[in-house]
Image 1: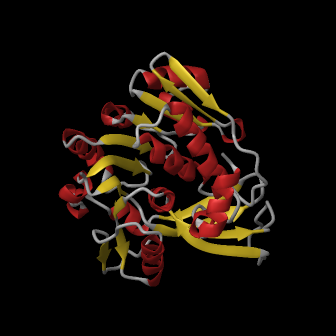
Image 2: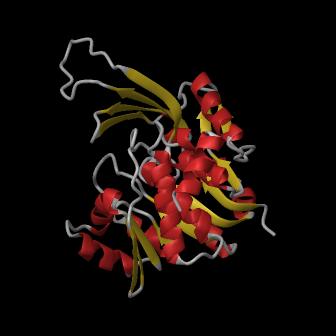
Length: 310
């Protein structure tokens, strides 16, 4: 029996979310937000935290700075029952990354200081630790610049140890969507983009064409469609699931929370309709409180929501 259900190697940082700012940020003006939230951020850490909250055994590796922001982020994962003994805390001039999110209701600006996110490298990884699992998940492919040249090797190594593999690229800040992604996809069992990311990864503006192209590269592609729910394509088979009706506080981390909900069922061998429904529930839960993990931290709130939304 492997030690973990899911292992993750990725970025660990906080999100600073500012609400109520004007849409146009005028230069040389002091602009006031009406609310703020400092919360656990980063796609990799949000997936890890929320998977653990749903009951999966999660091991997590990362690299953070020896600074207060890194310690807060690490403590949040510990409080969420994620195993973090292999997270490296490194002294030096590069500090833990931070994302500042300017929330404008239906849309947002995201400003990221990469910091130690971009410094995580092959030498930081404990492959025995990561391989002692049923499944390996990788997020933020384009942010992890130190590790990216060897991501294909990392996934191949996990695959050789019998793990299934999932990948969520998230956005490419350079908007290049390099061709090396297709080489990495050779080792992926489940690809988890949103609609825009699927089109970018496939090099087309047409979602249907993107799905068909990507489904030739990976056994299972799962596309997050926001208010339209989600779909899964496995070969010629297609499954869809509607979104869950909620009044959102914000959508920060909703896609990562979907990943957690989907993978929680996937690793247990559930059928795809069950996996999609679980992903949509987790994504909807995430939107009921600010940030990507706050709705999962409160046990009473989380359990009441999941009982209600079946």
